[in-house]
Length: 444
Image (cartoon, rainbow, N blue to C red; front, side, top):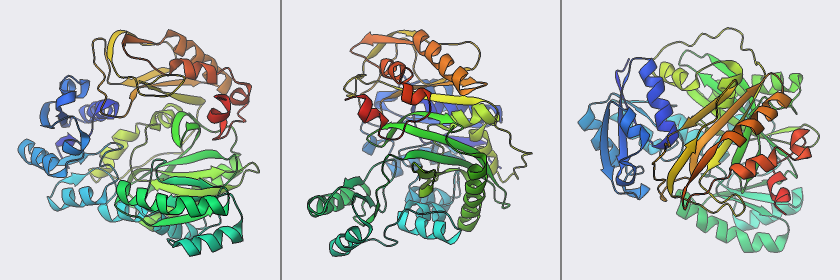
């Protein structure tokens, strides 16, 4: 049991965590950079500690400073959220060794799933389907030989990558010769690990992920799947639950293997197992994310569960006992970012007018407010609009209505609200036939 939680993050996920803690009677400590002194999470927390300049490397990614804040505040647990240090096994280990509870999987498990090669080996052991490719990191000559064997196009990935980073699609031998050394150098710079592996590139797939919550007593619950195929450059923009493309039989089959995968890892806390699904409906394991996902609210909307609160309870050592999990209706999440709706370039600035939609089936997760100045130093996510309907058609109609109501205006600031409106008018999306290439094709 712990009583005070340090939120090692910022923005909407910090606000989300503070609210969940408060409902459980837990005190909270916000950490913030100079650029975030007026952020909502700083105001809502019971305590707040400035840990440095705006640059994330000198604040939100600075482990010694976070540990110093932990010591000063006397918090006895750390909630990492997503991004920043949330999947960093070194950070988790340092927190563990200090005698403070890391709210997430253990550092050992984080290290396993963070290594994409090791994660694939465990997935293979429990029968999760894999994309044809290498089971170990490759040197260039090995990659050349394997690509010739399984056929182009292929994809090279950083073994320590994640969140859509460290990925290169290769369409022929010439491109492999050019991009392999570049990708290795990028992986070394981005992740401190230059190892690469190679696999067959699945053409025009859907991106499907399964949400799990697991406790230390061996209980693993799979809370259904989400479809995250609306994305640009591997970054998700719209997510929905459940996927209209997944049959009930396939849902049950994959969910059982996902649970086996988590048990084999000794996984605890919330996590997400991600797959590609090809045009024939075949699933291929990609990776596991050992943290809360940005898109977790769509699962909450269709299950009625509070996943962040379940994270906190599992970290407190409680056994999670859920009755039969029932998926009700459909939910769609729109990531509303401070960026140009046509070019996707970041567009921070002062919010001078803010109107948030409401009504039945509408949820808005955000840290912004009228008069808030969006800093240019961090991820451009401003708010998440989540809509629910009894049917997917109703959810889409509700999304259109809510997006029309949503107003974020101000000095220099633009948002991608208009982009989301355009997506909801596309026949391919309305019919659920979109795949991960949809946005690139829509923008042509």
